Image (cartoon, rainbow, N blue to C red; front, side):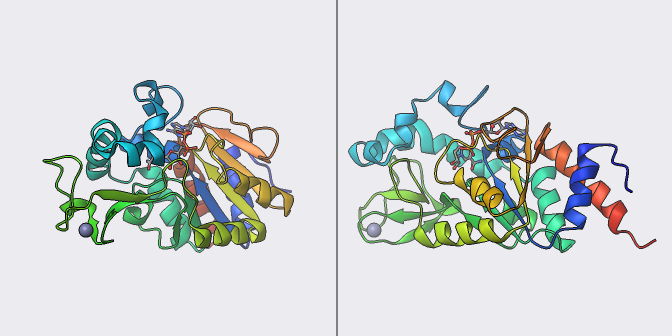
Length: 253
Ligand code: NAD
Ligand code: ZN
């Protein structure tokens, strides 16, 4: 019989016995990298009307959406670096424990930390696309001296992320649903679990028999319902603890 002293140790034990692990991450995992979440204390919606994230608003007034929302997001994404939570998930991949990260984030920090199989469920801020000719521009080369940023052809650039009111790219949705239904553990990290259809992934995993381990600073609609257990705390600290416990378990005796 194994005595488990902490939830981090329990999670490490569960991970060590699993065959197929996926992580679903949300804005909370990047908070310790300096990017605020949308909801909750210190969230973007405390200062900015969520209507600015709707595709209709962007089409009606792209200059305003770039000015109010996207310019600030670009500044944050340009400066952000992975934190111990992103690094911990990348380490789990190196250890052969975690296969895929499904992220709702658009900041590219999982890839920067070394995760190699990342499904960007809501697209990415790494590239921008001209709405007239379809040319693409990397985020690092986007000129924001005049808003909205424009392509050589005169068309307006939009980030390759999914605005409210837009569809999730079907290949991302289908692959995520497939992986969720086949995993035996889903780590759900730093998501308020209210943005659909991303919030369905833990439900799919649970219904297919997986253990759902939630890591969040606060309870969510998954807590005590879909989550098998929840570890309350900052993602960077909790994931570092889990990785440390797992490395002890996996260390050759
Ligand atoms: P959310 O903003 O709705 O919720 C954030 C969640 O993270 C909350 O449950 C909060 O309790 C938790 N949290 C905050 N700090 C934490 C920490 N240090 N450790 C662990 N948990 C923490 O985020 P969401 O569920 O991802 O949905 C918002 C949408 O906004 C997503 O679709 C995403 O695309 C987008 N978004 C992305 C970024 C980014 O790319 N970094 C930032 C903001 C919003
Ligand atoms: Zn163009």
